[in-house]
Every structure is written in structure tokens, then in C-alpha cells.
Image 1 (spheres, helix red, strand yellow):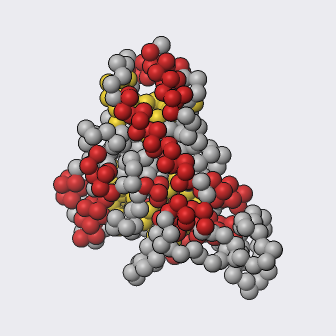
Image 2: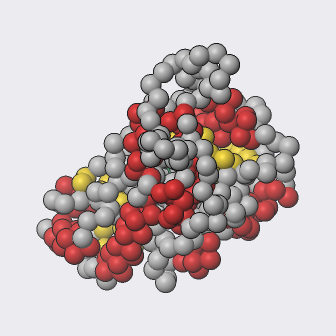
Image 3: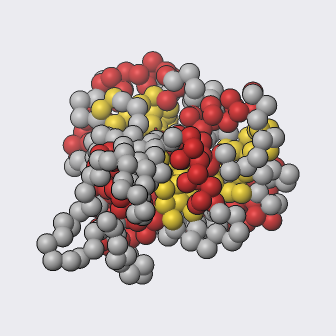
Amino acid sequence: MTSTAPDPHYSPATLAVAAGRPERVAGAAVNEAIWLSSTYVADGPVDYGRTDNPTWQAFEAALGALEGGRALVFGSGMAAIAAACALVPQGSTVLAPRHVYSGTGALLREAAAAGRVHLREVDIADTTAVRAAVQGAALLWLESPTNPMLEVADLRATTSAARAAGALSVVDNTFATPLVQRPLELGADVGVHSVTKYLAGHSDVVLGASVTRDDDPGRALHARLRAYRHLHGAIAGPQEVFLALRGMRTVALRVERAQATAAELARRLFTHPRVERVRHPSLPGDPGHDLATAQMRGYGAVLAIEVAGGAAGAERVAAGTRLWVHATSLGGVESSLERRRRHGAEVTTVPESLLRLSVGIEDVEDLWADLDQALRS
Ligand SMILES: *Cc1c(COP(=O)(O)O)cnc(C)c1O
């Protein structure tokens, strides 16, 4: 079983490799095993497969070290999001970004329609509006940068406004990853991830995670999220978790490469004759540039472009690439793109012509040549 935590002062790139390993004793495996057992002999540290699993523990040790808190793995990003939303009582007011991830938006709107919460939506990049709207709320839901509009929230200012108003703050850190942004250090109470994306990184699993502070004063957030996972059965299969941990060993390399390529593509797309707008906080003129520079280490590897010719023009570009995969999701080693409004769940303030680009780790010139030919054809 997992033990011997590495020095927490190691850099994230080191922690991603060193954390969540079995104890170093002669003959021991260097990787935690895939524990395929629904039950365990009585009176040990793990008793039942819906409660805990040593393969989960290894992944959680590694993600917790990376993000600076205590992690829990869930069966999907949405399972972790549902668990975090359930931290506030029935009838609570929830404040969320207007352009929150479409699944989170659909979940919150469903809860509001059923009378379980009151939902307020806000432009998450407008800190003054967030400060006003968080008054009386029990939960501030943050996502930064947002999916797919790439808006940047001031995480320090908004989480501190939430704390002052007595609201819990949760940050969906899927786009940034802990390599680029550490929400707990910026004041958040809970971080959530779609592990499906960069953390696992190979488009071969669907998983989620939450991360809370080690020194969570009196609110027992970790224990409550763990109880939610156990009681709602929001659990992950050990084989998927093994793959996610294997993928996470290279997350620093993948994210560094992908975000450098994304910034270069954003710079070139900015002057492309068939592109009307580029959204990526790396661009000096982007509305989120200064904030992202202050609170992130890099700008992430997802960008969005609005192309000439509206919805049809965007569909033509998506169908016209040969290297970029036309597919939903993001964060894999392979670059992919998608017109987000083809999904009914995407809000109508996302432009029809918007293509979300998830930059992978291929060669930048190959990616550029393919995108350029698809845009021009
Ligand atoms: C994909 C995604 C999710 C949902 O995660 P799943 O693993 O698909 O359940 C949540 N938030 C963001 C920002 C995402 O991109």
C-alpha cells in the first residue's frame, strides 16, 4: 500500500512523478497495484470496495501533493461536481459563472428547476458583479479559465468575497491543472477536476476528483465529500484510476508542451484572415491576460476561435482537419477541436462560430499547417 510521502516542497513536476508510490522496501513494486477486490479481510485499513481502494489512495496521494490538499477520486468529473454542489443545504443560493462548463450549468439549472437551489448567474470576469451577487449565497462556483469562453476570474478576490459573505467557494480547475494553477492557495475551499482531461491525459478514461485543504477548519469537507462518494456510489473503477495515475506521471511534460504550442498557435491565429476572434489569456490584448499572468503559471492549452462564415463556416473547419480530431472533450495528447454550439446544452451566448481547440503534444508546425489548410479550404 501507498506510503512514504515525498517532500512537499518538491516542485510540482517532481511531485507528479514521486508521490503516490508504494513503500521502498526490498523487492517492492515501484507502482501501486490495481487492487481488484470488492471486500477485504476484516479489521484492516480498507474494508469494502465502495468505501476505499489502495489504487485510489495512490492516485489521491499524487493529486493531493500536486494541488496542495487532500484529494478524492470520483467516477467522473460530474460526480465530483455533484458531490461538491451537495455540500450546501437544500434551498441554498448558488452563484455560478454564466459560461460555466455546460454539464455543471445543466446540473445547477436542473437543481433550480426542482426547487433544490436558487441559481444566480454572473459574468465571472466581472469581480465587482461577483462581490455584489455573492451576498446571501451559500456557494460560489468558480471556473477559470471557463469552458469554452476562456474567461478568467480573479480567484483571490472572489474567494475572499465568498468567505466574507459566509459562502463556500469551489473552483473547477480542469482547464488549468495543478501545474498551472493551485486554487486552494488562491483561497478556494474545494477544487474539482475532470481527471478525464489533462490529468489522465490520454483520452482513455472518464474520472473526476475533488481536493480540499489539509487544515479545513471545522467543516470536515473532505469527510463529507468522502461520505457522498460512498453513499451515492460515485466511485471509480481501480483499472481506470491506475491508468489515470500512469498518465499523471507525465502531466508536467504534457502541459508545458501543450500550453507553449497553444500560445504560439493563438499568436498566429490572431492575424489569420479567416479568424475573427481568438480567445486565449496568453494574448496581451485578451481581457483575462493580466489576471492570468498574476495567478497562473502559463495560460493553459485550450483556446477558442471564432471563424468567418458563422456556424457553417466553423463546421467546415472542424470537418476539414486531418491531424486535429473533430471530437468533444479535451486534454488528451492528441489535438482536437469542436464547435461547441452543436450541443444543445451549450448556452446561446457562446457564439455559433466558436471552435474550441484543445492543443495536444504534436509538433507545432504540423498542427499549424493542418489548421491553416482547414481554415482556408
Ligand atoms: C469535461 C469537463 C467536466 C466534466 O467532467 P467529466 O469527466 O466529463 O464528467 C467538468 N468541468 C470541465 C471544465 C470540463 O471540461
